Amino acid sequence: MRAVKAVSPWPLGVSLHPRYLLGEEQWPDIGKGLVEIGVREVALMIYSSNPARVMDVATTILQRYPALGFFDRSKRRAAAFISRKPSKRGPSAFEERMEQVVKGLRLANFRGLIVQDWKFWQEMPQ
Image (cartoon, rainbow, N blue to C red):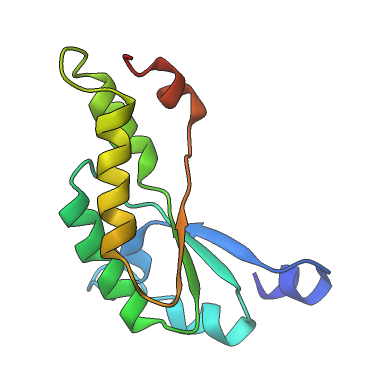
């Protein structure tokens, strides 16, 4: 990433599984390095259909690295979960869950949510 940063005229961003920023024993914590080389944005791949779990993991990371801007890519999994519940779930339930996450992550370095797979959104029951 340092080599890319050295030659790129564009801001540098990266998508990461949260384990690389949580400092868990078996995974290297690369957050300090991302800050040092000037990464502007990190898309966290928090794949959970539970808004409380998404907020818990994201809050820990956002508070640990206030110099990094974060997007959450959890929408893909939430959409997959909702699409398997055709009788009661649909776009409105999906949007409610995502709104819970947005309202719950009121930290200055939270930049929003990313829909990773548009196909899941299109296939959701109406």
